[in-house]
Image (cartoon, rainbow, N blue to C red; front, side, top):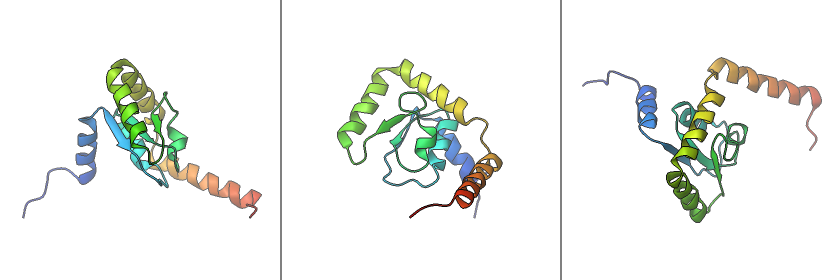
Length: 125
């Protein structure tokens, strides 16, 4: 049995960096980690505005928002990016800058702060 010289995470990052667009037309995204990974790898992230993705993707600035369950919208947004490589590059750079300083520690702190806020203020049902 042989094992690769690098981890699955390293392989995933390497593969992401080989592409210009990261497409994630998810219907549900709890944390948004996959969007952050795409942005950190220098991809132009294209995804739905669900879950934590909306905390990172600013449509046309740090990514591209697509409509849920709308293949025509997905196609037109990706076609636009390929026809406008300068815009795609600008979005990719802005996305990278937005997430470059994130770490597990900062994300964990933000999550804990969020829960603390909810617990202190309460949530009405």
